[in-house]
Image (cartoon, rainbow over all chains, first blue to last red; front, side, top):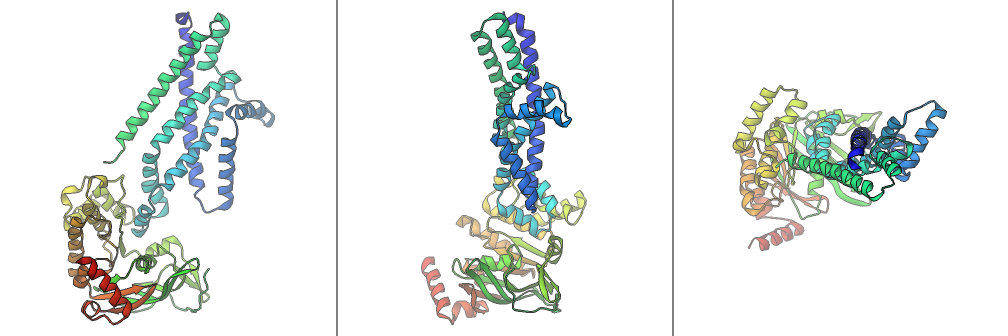
Length: 211
Length: 272
């Protein structure tokens, strides 16, 4: 039975992986942009960043997906289920990444910045040469964690009919009436991907430890 | 903006020999006045040591001179140029960051916590500002970087990351980083306070060498023996005020004020 559905499961697994990967790229990009904007001396900009972060953290991913999927067309944005899922997951994750990056920036000792200021290094270069590289090494563990969470949240995309791992498994359950085996199987598949991500995270952590 | 009772007309004071000058320098943290009417002049090639009990405002004084802290009143001049503010219709207005950088371009700073950048090797720590600020190409920057690191005895550690170095080595690398920019004056903030006792000597030696080469320096230090040796002038700060200043022999052998006598007594009893 598993063998008969293997192609469908593998297709779903692949979809889950690339959906998570694309959503993570969007989320990390957005998060970094928001955390940098949040450090700007303009109150209005900081306010908008804050609203975005709080909205993303305060809303279930499913509601965000519904709003984009069903609400999008009424303001002229019509997306297929899959891009909706990727974008939804991306902007949802962006709120969390923004907070991770903010914490990362804050844990850079103030003296490191002062040393750069005293050498006359301009502010923009302090951000790109000192703050961002240091912040990135500090945040690898929470970022790994957040990507794992996004992977698991991507299961919710099945509800708006994205053909990812959970959706395809549900299809298998509906057709075969077997429940436990497919879901245990799929749990193992998710777990395997999670292990892969945390392995990558640990590898990066070792690689950029600067010792 | 704090109230400023001094009306200022000039941004430039022409006294070619004076590298650093503070006039009525005052710094408040909220209600607390940490620096009160500090008048200080540091001349070319002069080494001034600032001593005093903890909390007396020594580090704050240095940080105000570096404009890492905005001062609340009075003025700071670096090589005759007003630091941190400009005069607009007789009022002081905060200067732009790039102009602040311009005024303190020739000021180097050494910190208690070294503040090397952990994600760069020693050599890159020393060459980064040369490349970004002085726009040198890589070879030129590395030539100067190596030369400076040799000066502080760190030429065999150029490819190490700071985490692999002892505190003394990190501080020497940090001194090299400041020196590579060819500053006219060095502000040195408790350079050995974060070091294990056996590493203090190597750092003080480097600073001593700089002094004998004629580097102008303001040094905050708890090492009284060192201050007595290296300083041309010693400033004793207590509760945000200069209580006494003079040459080291006078300060250490013949202190006048009760507070300095007391301070030196505590220090002596600790040394025994």
